[in-house]
Amino acid sequence: MINQIYQLVSPRQYEVAYKEFSLNDDHIIVRPTHLSICRADQRYYTGKRGKETLAKKLPMSLIHEGIGKIVYDPKKEFKVGTKVVMVPNTPTESDEIIAENYLESSKFRSSGFDGFMQDYVFLDRDRVVPLFKEMDPNVAAFIELITISMHALSRFEKKAHSRRNVFGVWGDGSLGFITALLLKRAYKNSKVIVFGKNAHKLERFSFVDQSYQIDNIPSNVRIDHAFECVGGIGSQSAINQIIDTITPEGSISLLGVSEYPVEVNTRMILEKGITLIGSSRSGRQDFVNTVDFLKENQDIIEYLETLIESVQPVKTIQDIINAFEKDLTSSWGKTIMLWRI
Image (cartoon, rainbow, N blue to C red):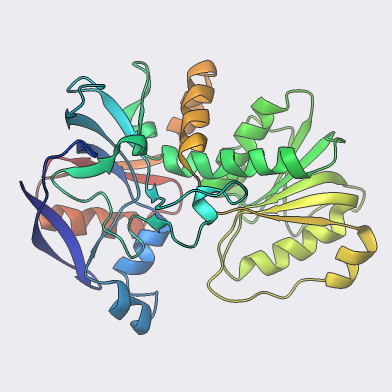
């Protein structure tokens, strides 16, 4: 079977590649329907990953957040037309200690491995998770992003101490919004405080107990545990502010990605006995847990819908470019591509 793949060949330039795939018992074929643009995709699209990285990884199909419909299952375990979320992490081995998303041998779509911008995506059988009927497909398109927060919460649950009266979330973007929302629902008796730069963004966090701009935090504010969702160079000031605000022996879950090393106050990390918990990407079980969580808490889908900034129909390569350019002008939320190409 010949498949059309829409690859980024250089910054802001896409071309169609044709690849042959065999129909066998190992792969389920999914037709993408809704794809979500991530900041990581934008770094490739705009060429901000650097010449060496681009030369190594391009040409490559972008997008690792998306859903689709099953069009072929050789074992007939899934009905044709079943709506599924696609899991971008693709492990090649298993380890009894190291999770699939931390194995160095694992591949990740749209990061050195073709992403979901294809006519059809050939996936291993365990790389799809069925969606429930009531799920908003535009929200489902960025379930992968939600799994990042869900994965961080699962790591926190295993590693942090049991006093969980007050949580702090640093970051007023999509990841901070999702993390705060999941914390508020998972720990109903706990207080959740959000810390951010932008007052107009913080106004969207109507479900939390309190929010502060980072340059106007009362001196008496204390938290038991923190989640850093800032990323970039801004993560440096965020982490150090958390260190100043957190009570002794609390934990800091690091979710924000920075392209460059950042300096943190290790002296106070030692003095307070703080635990740093790194968290990156997610695996199949995180997708299963996230879909189950959303099914059990369907009212939070309305909050997640507020993260959708625009929905762009895509029928041509120029439409892809338009969607990415539109996303660059967005100061909040997600751009969803209705994949009709």
